[in-house]
Length: 163
Image (cartoon, rainbow, N blue to C red; front, side, top):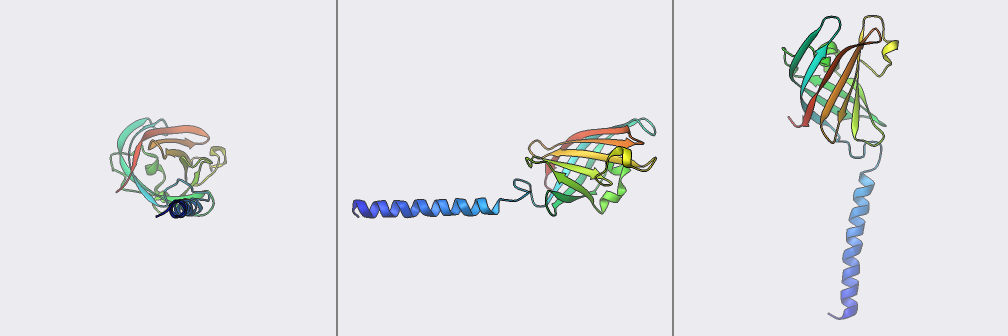
């Protein structure tokens, strides 16, 4: 093989590598870049409730996140341990069939909304509202629940992708 043949072969190999990288970059575009398509998260958290009565609980549960359109998706809760009554999931049983989430601009966090994305002040009197964040890089979950525009509970813990 002469020098010209080696150069042509090297160029052809490099062109194939560049084409493969361009193909991957094209597939990884859109609002959910870096966000898993559908994942079940196993979470372990600690909750402190201040209203309507003071309480504290620890336990595990599962969340399933599924992207939909734009920068939004649906999350579904399951397997909440009975003893973990302070969890925001206990306040929002409707999320067992689905509540919404949004993705932060840099696609590193989910913002989970329960029962829906709304300001605490816009909720009907006595109804709970929760916003939780799930950091996709650390697995850290933090939730703040409100009733009548005041903090009702705080929860934090970690979540891991998997069943």
